[in-house]
Image 1: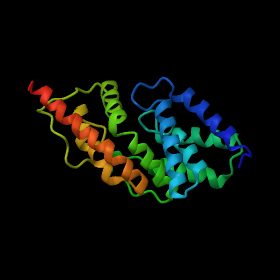
Image 2: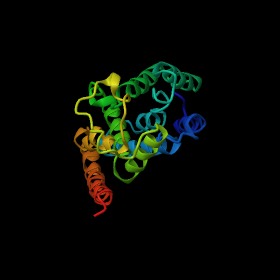
Image 3: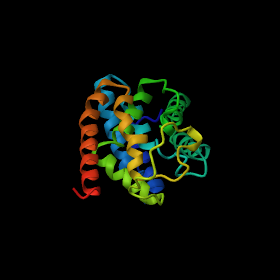
Length: 216
């Protein structure tokens, strides 16, 4: 492991800024920054490895299949960065495993194995709900060419991993297909406590949205 962990975190920040700094889908550098900082705070409370959580939080979207030609190509980027900075193989494997297993992908993925993985997953999911989560949902839908809302396009009940990002959809449907489910999918007590307020805010937003949609 590199002697100065802060140097590695700074290198990771610079790398993520270079890779995702101009992303407009809600997966930009600042999303990675928030996930990293939140994961570090949760790790400190839950007695996990704060450094691994912060590092993986920064790098977690580098391998996202939405942002790469393939997940494998993205994982190679992460592995190259860590090896370049002389990170030991054990830590590299831990980081790569978390990144590979933490994604939602329709909700059908197997549970992450380590406490650190659960914490980074929680931090990522927390950033997908609440006020910022709402903003990110509409940013992503706009980037993907989706409508804000169409009452004739219904939320999907069961989504296979392969079809999660396929088909005609709307930003509002994303709340029902994913965002409103995340509160009950948190792994740690700390994240569950934080999720309550953010979840309520989304529910209130949807109430106002439908009132305005119906011109009440």
